Image 1: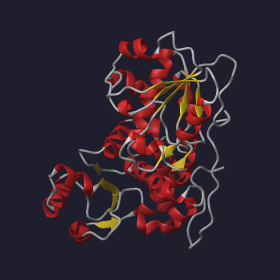
Image 2 (image 1 turned 120 degrees about the vertical axis):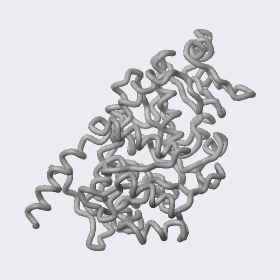
Image 3 (image 1 turned 60 degrees about the vertical axis):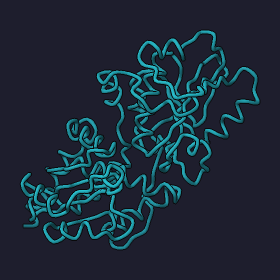
Image 4 (image 1 turned 60 degrees about the horizontal axis):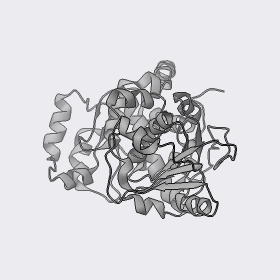
Length: 344
């Protein structure tokens, strides 16, 4: 099998098959004395990913198996995630390589049920669930994690850290970098990114401009100045410029970009989006597209992100560790160049 050869295009809307990245059954909670840790996610996927990274390290230090909640469409608060229906959820092991994730240390079990339903089910079984739900947001760090969550008096099978406290720096950066080394998007997501790259060519550049982030921080950029800055940084007008997280509605901000560069958006590749749409619930398709776009930006020659965004921050990290998180890029470029030379 050639990693780069999946047929998408020519107006085809056939769904490319997807498979799990992990053999452990969904929702597996054993009654053999194994102890588990579960948490409340929130935010967009990149917030959820960071919360999962913290939870992975928490599970390691308190010696519990991690129950990984489903990935969800963007929610603005943990309680909104908690009550999401299945239409807004997708099992995390379809998006991340769980075999790689499991190498970090603690055992992991992906969920394919809602947190709400699982909590309700566990509550009916004596000795199964201990809910740690602080009245106020906590900011435990390092040894405080063991003190508060590794308490040996908590004998219940599942320890559930419920509420808004997951999204903070539980551990120092060097520790979390070691965790992140094992957070790699699934082969399926990487192959879809390659399909975008085939269309963009081997020398494309990319930017991530989520305009809402600028609005929220009151620092909306001047499009002409932004384009001029890109030119100063060596963004070649002769090469394609991919703009990630395209606005849902037409926005005049990008007109100047289109006059200067050969601009492409996700909407220019609807056949690729259609090829994976059938594998995911409708409310999650754009979120899955976001993961693909992160890898497209990771592989670009030059990249400029949004300073306020976790989406951009992860791209920057991936670019510094590209061989680890998107190992196919080098081989793709070599193969693409060979094919291009043969055509010319």
